[in-house]
Length: 208
Image (cartoon, rainbow, N blue to C red):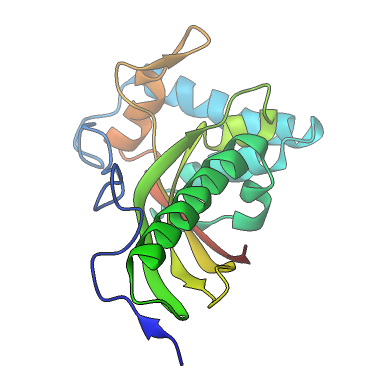
């Protein structure tokens, strides 16, 4: 029968204890709406149908959710996110670190089978236009956290069972920009109550 390691989890070095909080935009409906805010709203309402025609379904769905103004969490397909090379590489790097750290502890231990809890903390992976245009428009980057158990058999073979949690504050950062397009007019839709920021969530499970 194996032993369970009760020391701090593997892999926490460099990870954040909490997901990144929302940006410092004004609070929902805190500012009065101006005529140009309604022009921005009209532009945003035209984007989801256009993006859907171009096959950018995820981006269209995110913008629609923002414009609905409920502020409710939006669930994404974490398995599809994990299929993106940039995200997969970030997750695989964490799993490789767990594997190496577990073997180091196992070799320094009394021998026999052992199990080690692991937790990456919150980390992020950048999604660029080249990686996937739809996910880039939908999220631009993703925050993820791996938790799981690393088991080392008596002969040194390693098996990992893990869960990937995804969480991201979906908003437009006031003062930010992308491809020369300023985000402040879009952030004002939240600040004036014409749209509402929300949290993106998701989870997936794996074995390595």
